[in-house]
Image (cartoon, rainbow, N blue to C red):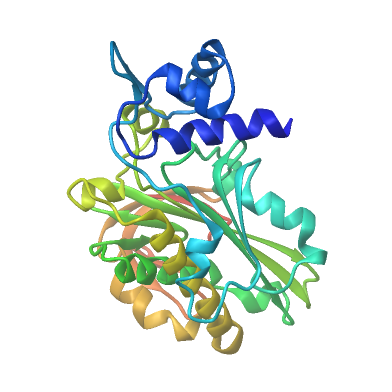
Length: 324
């Protein structure tokens, strides 16, 4: 099983510079047959990686990429690596933390090149081709219970936008309750999963996925407007290890701030980044569909919506929100 995992990883490593490599050279470098190279290329393509084949030149990616490296990420963290792991493939980084949380320290981080069963809000699938984007999760323990964690996903969103700014990416906003948006579409998603006792203590597993490069086939499968960092940065997105370090640093610092001060410590920044504020909205949930205008969030992080019948406040478990 390990050999089967290593061979696609080494194939991607060989293709990462973005220059064509012959099938023969790939076979010799990885230690497999030419037929096995073809098989692994087909598997990477099936996962959404756009491996090109040029007659007389070999296989290549359309652009250079950087494989994730735990040492490269740790070297950019001022407070040290802490517990930080990089995996080639997991079912999901959040599931890995959930399985092992009893044996991991607070603020442990897991990253993966690819996820076979990544998920988003309400169990939606999260497409995770290898080597293109960022998928990571962070473990945070709280002494308080679930009720004391209101607004956590919004605070995490602020941390993600700050990390993007640290990496040189401007123009991102936050769509309540857990999406990072630009005018061109969704850039990143956040999923916070809670476990433990209602009155405390409890555990939060914070998952973040950021679109660094979205091939056409993956973009079409998403089912909603999406954008990637390559598009925002004119074809040259931030180095993935640099971006990963920015995200880890901001998440660890932000989760510690949230533990001390709750959502109040992030409220002003969220208001500045609020993508729904002033927009006409349609909301669908248990109480039916209704329309209104986004009016920010309250102190607990609940969405405020102005309707013809007055202001309505909703939380993330209740509705799906679309700007109209």
